[in-house]
Length: 157
Image (cartoon, rainbow, N blue to C red; front, side, top):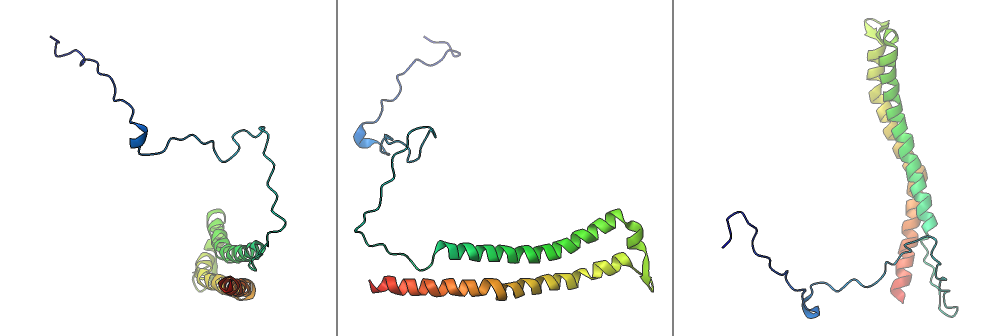
């Protein structure tokens, strides 16, 4: 007889499932990447010379150029709007006498610079659209045309 504070009698754990009833196959393969950088690497397989190579028309370099143009476009527009706002904040924090000076008729410099934030934001939007028309849209159109030609060429096969 056991007391109420003793542990239950020891039971053997469940037996492992048979190979036919395992939910997942056993993991016996090694990883597909090199685990240790100093391990000898297998030589790369050379492509078969007789196999026809099919270069697609839309190259990765075209997409890289498009991403660079788009990145430049975003930076110019963002830095225009945020740069002006940061300048306004810095002047408010470190040049309060300049920001409280009167321009004309009770209009302070700080209020004038704050009201100029709206036209500067409109300028940033215009810069974004302008650089899109000049730099990004022609590249995107070219890649779109090359992809359509490549799709037609693939459909013919």
